[in-house]
Picture 1 (cartoon, rainbow, N blue to C red):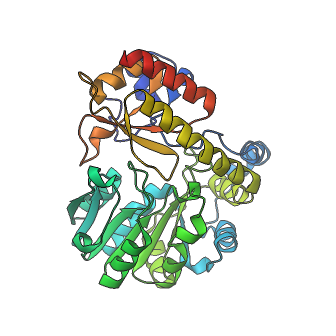
Picture 2: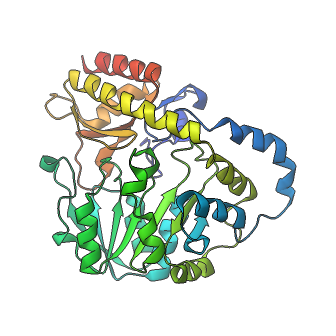
Length: 354
């Protein structure tokens, strides 16, 4: 049974069906969540406000939009909150219906799925392994619409500023997925969020589930010109953002110590884990975020399917990255977790690869 049968990592129910281990026993490296878990305030709010689920949520998500406006210093009229980034990816394509959308491959599969469901077509431009999967120039991407991960999934690479500027100057509609931008130390400088609030050419999608480890809540937001936000809001399903999601989203934005701890931890843990993986003979590509793209190239007799099965037998889930167009069966992706988990990962990998 393929562990990514629904197209994503983190599917503990499928892993349990395939291997018989209870969900709570898995060490999940296939899903790129903050390993510190949700901030404590999330549990406190749920305990305190569980009776309030008897009320309808605010359909305009006013308090959370105001908080996002204050946090990012952009107008509330430029913000649309959604049921996770996935809803917003689907919504922006469904509303604007670009005839052709250019995708940098490998990239998040939901970009293409959204385009095809809306009746559009995609054109792929491959990111080169010899360039460490960095998007080096904009010439190949000039088109009516471009969908880009910034940082990209599964490669973990940011898009160089000059490439984004060149695409903007070329007149392309830029849909920029910044789901992992919170993990980047220079987030404020590198994000396109403020440009999007003023331009009809740029739309930025952000996730709140990865950084704050609340994927079960489903929460994200989009930033665009107010005129575009109004069009998107008209097409959005009513009450798609539930009461608890709105409440939690508002609270976690104040968790400054949590955010600083996460960024400080990652700056230390990413190079440590990368070095340990390289010591096993694996190829580890540069990453700007909380996950790593790794290749088994050079290890005779190994492919990702064999490694995934072997590691699952040891209670550890890794992501089969060959499912991303542009990558072959030597690639896998792993999240970066806390040191004790990472030490166990290295120990189990070492035993498997022997």
